[in-house]
Image 1 (cartoon, helix red, strand yellow):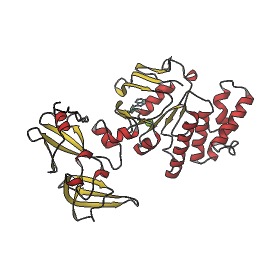
Image 2 (image 1 turned 180 degrees about the vertical axis):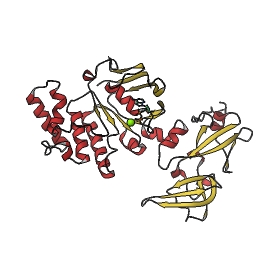
Image 3 (image 1 turned 120 degrees about the vertical axis):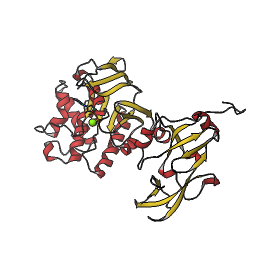
Image 4 (image 1 turned 180 degrees about the horizontal axis):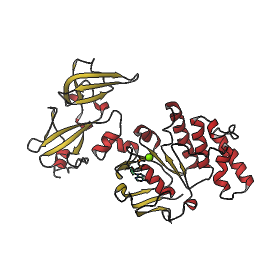
Amino acid sequence: MSEIRFENVSKVFDGNIAALQEFSLKIPSPRLVVLVGPSGCGKTTLLRLIAGLERPTSGEIYLGDDRLDTKDVRSRDVAMVFQNYALYPHMTVRGNLSFGLRIRKVPKETIAARVKEVSKSLEIDTLLDRRPAQLSGGQRQRVALGRAIIREPRVFLFDEPLSNLDARLRDEMRYLIRRLYQRLKTSTIYVTHDQVEAMTIGEMLVVLKDGRIHQVGSPSECYERPGDTFVASFLGSPPMNLIDGTFEAASGKVRLDTGTEFAVAAGVADAIGAERGIVVGIRPEAFGTSPPDGVGLAFAGRISLRETLGHDVLTHVDLGGREIIARGCDPGEAGSDCTVYTSPDAVHFFEKRSGTRIVARERTAEGQV
Ligand SMILES: Nc1ncnc2c1ncn2[C@@H]1O[C@H](COP(=O)(O)OP(=O)(O)O)[C@@H](O)[C@H]1O
Ligand SMILES: [Mg+2]
């Protein structure tokens, strides 16, 4: 079991495309880490650097005490599963599964035993004589998974392995990957642009944008305490409502662009400090149709759209040119006026200029900061 460590890793393509910038991270072993971010943020590049398909422009990568980024590909002991499966089309399933062991000169009997064991665990043992073209997408991805597992690597790398599968198969494979991890306890870095997938699979999330880390934490930490407005709006569907406003130091109140005004807790006022622009974040599910304990923030507007999702209702409320989305409460039909409320405790505060989260300061018993 070895920790994976990235020290100031940067990758610049063609002299000016910075795919990764000063990426530093320690992953304790074993962990199932999900690297999540929009398309083009550098996810695949990071995996390719670990696998040895690319070299960092600067920085170092370690696996335990071994420096990884200078090793040649074959001796790195990591296995990557790709989005498009990348199976050898002219080889049977058995040939695909055993290839990595054959080139490492593993004894024949060992290979046969491993193929049997791995194919059974993935329920592909009846397909061993077929070629990839004779398999469904889900079966191909199981073979790709088997090909990685059979080598017993020190690290698994998954690059959006579910994106070519339909929704049902995705759920099934997601479950399979989690179970595999629980059984093998091999550190896994799983890459996806899909925040729902990230939240359900990961023990640890790394949220990436433009080659930079925005937040590292458990899925619930990142969801409940997003470190900036990017993470706030990237995690969650529909995303957190972000509303611009101004903090007035004299009154200790925040006035939102929607007209809503409310007093902030003393610790928050201390943290904001002077009069300045802020962004307020409210999760859709934090709205209700009655004021919590009579101290709620009220948002009055007109319902522009009511979406029923079977188990849930989304209500789009137009607050005079600006729309918010409420989830779970059901304030009325499209076209009608409504007021939705939220508790001051459910409000997230961000600095307007940087987008960074404002963390309330603790006050001492005397009320001093
Ligand atoms: N071989 C390459 N040559 C030039 N630019 C590349 C290369 N590979 C990736 N990039 C660029 O680096 C950035 C990150 O790409 P990538 O790691 O593939 O992102 P992701 O997997 O998150 O979608 C993108 O701007 C992409 O265009
Ligand atoms: Mg990619």
